[in-house]
Amino acid sequence: MDLLGWFSSGSILFPFLSGIVTKSKQDKPLKLLNAFFIVSFIAECLGTYYARSGINNLWMITLFTPIEFTFLMSILSYYNPPFQKVLRGTIIPFLILFILINYFFEDIKHFNIYSRPLESILLTLGSAHTLFFTIQKKPLTFYAMPPFWVCIAIIVFFAGNIVIFALANWTLSLPKPNAVFFSSIYMVFNILGNILFALAFWSPLFGKQSLEMAKEEERD
Image 1 (tube, rainbow, N blue to C red):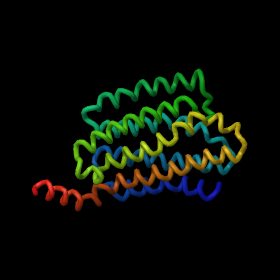
Image 2: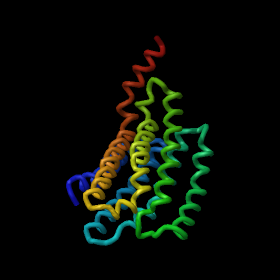
Image 3: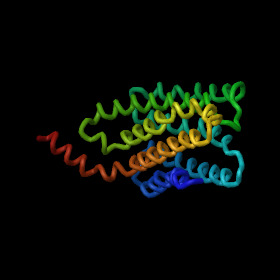
Image 4: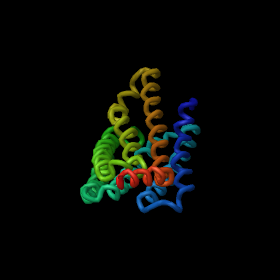
């Protein structure tokens, strides 16, 4: 594994450690995000171990997809009350589709070229709507709120990787330099996403001063 690969795998430590350090200051959605990154950290460690041992770890990525979708869509639903039922209403249908797709069309030991892009599209749309709601609700202090950073992280990672995952099987047939290029793009988006998720945990603490300044401006 090259330097970028190691940094991509290690970037999970940013949100993982941030979630642990700020645990006492977390509300319900942040606690759920913290739990998600504990699960993600364990999966990342196992996946890296399998990869270094020459064992196919793609089945872990496939099985992690419904777990990831359930966690992230649930978190978005807390941050978007007017759209909460719609966001949560996508979870069960997605899980059913995931099972059907993997049973009839996909191989668990290969890239999931159908369910993964579907997850990415739904999460990107859900986070975009939640981001708009967050900014509209708190136009002066949205950057000091966890939902802003959570939504940006989801959009950066999943929107950036929709095409990559949609063409995953095709890239495997490309010459190695091209396949490595797509892999490198994925790693960059993964690193950026993890850094942005980490900021979600810290934003309530670092945003206190900004919130106070915004309140003073509103009084004036």
